[in-house]
Image 1 (cartoon, one colour):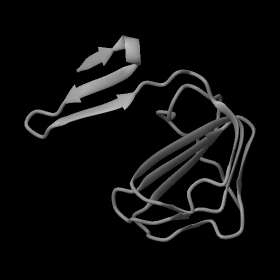
Image 2 (cartoon, one colour; image 1 turned 45 degrees about the horizontal axis):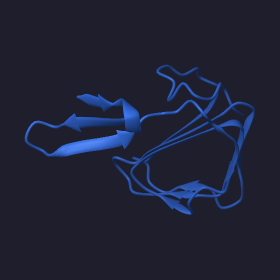
Image 3 (cartoon, helix red, strand yellow; image 1 turned 90 degrees about the horizontal axis):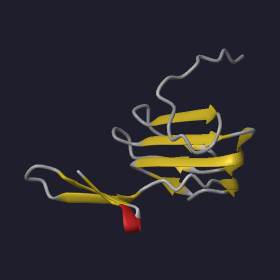
Image 4 (tube, helix red, strand yellow; image 1 turned 120 degrees about the vertical axis):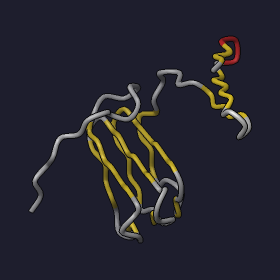
Amino acid sequence: MVLFEPDNILRIGTFGRGAWQSPTANGICETTINYLPSIMEGFRFYEASSSITTNSIISGGFGTNVYLKAGDYIDLTDGFHAKDENTEVKIYIDACGAGIPLTSKKVKTE
């Protein structure tokens, strides 16, 4: 693993499966995110310091993990749907900038 600091890029060799790279987090969060992509598949993580509003359709089945995190609220509007039982969607109300929470609290809904 190599962190190339001037460009804030993390590069990782995957032992015979090629190389992977991604920009590092800069600690700056958008205040609000309105209407994410209409269809989401694969791994997705979105966070905002205040709120997220989405009517996305989450599809893709096994291997699709979508995480939404906002400081105040997340509004799932008409049309939001996770299509497959193997699709994972996790929603957090938490401070912005720390990435995906490692633990979660169970919330009872009625």
